[in-house]
Image (cartoon, rainbow, N blue to C red):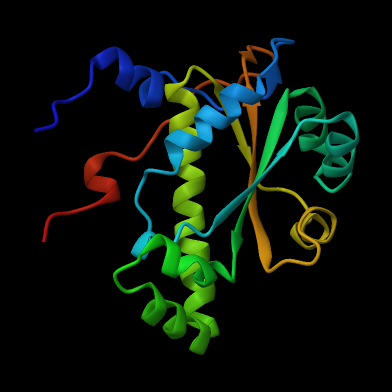
Length: 198
C-alpha cells in the first residue's frame, strides 16, 4: 500500500515550486529529458490513449522560431531557457490504441475514428493531463518550469507539427530557474471557495 511522500517532496512539487521567468546557464541533458518523459508516461490517461506529443525545443534555430510565434513578453523566456517543450495532442491518437490497450484497442480505435468530436475532446483533455504530469515529473527531477500560453497556436502547428494531426496546447520552459523576474507568490482559493462536498 502506498504511503504519503515526505513534506519536503510535497514542498518541491507544490508548496515551494514557482513558475520561473528567468533561467541560469546550467544545461539540461538529453538523458534528463529522456528520464523526464519515461517518468511522465506512466501517469494515467483515458483508455491509456496517451495523446500528448512533445517537441523539445533546444537549438538556437528552434528557440528563435518558437519565440517569433510567442507574445512579446514570452520571447525572452523562451530564448533564455535551456529547453522549451511544446505540448501538443494528436487527433489521430487512436491509431495507437491497439498497441496501448491490447484488450480492447481495435474497438476503441474504431469508436474514435467514427466520432471526430469525441476524439478531439479526448485528445485535448488527456493531452492537457499529460502536460500537467510533465510539470510534476520535471519538478520531481529537480527542474524548474515556466508554463505558458500566449503564442500563435496555428503558427506553432505549421512550424513544428506540419504534416501531422497534432495540435499545440501550451508550452513549458524547463531548466534551473533564477530569481530574475520572479513575482511574489499570489494567493489561492480556499477549499470552501473552490469546492464543496455533495
